[in-house]
Length: 173
Image (cartoon, rainbow, N blue to C red):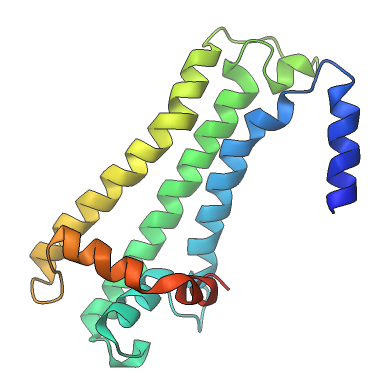
């Protein structure tokens, strides 16, 4: 895969399409995150947010109350949908908005004139602002819905960080 990527990069560098992969990085990254959430919603699997909740509580998934299990499944689905929507917008902006965007550069469509600035703002700032905003909204709702399980925001973030790399590697398998 590395050799193929290196050959592809060398080929792109020789022509007018050298920057095309940069336009694809945001939608690919966000789509991969959406997939990480969505794939845990398949039957028989523990939803990603459920894995996190169980780890934070120091229990296994079956020990979480049924209301918490249902909530974590819905939140995992909401994250998957949000991230998939962001990836779709990132891709649409890369395809159409950037003057000389992907489709225009490939001769398949004229540039829409929305501009590179709009793409850059959305892909590089808007995505993260929406992800952060959604995280804060979900945290606030969770504090209202399950007050005994939600510490203050700083304590929650510290507990998340203490889960460590081994947990995240396993959770994202």
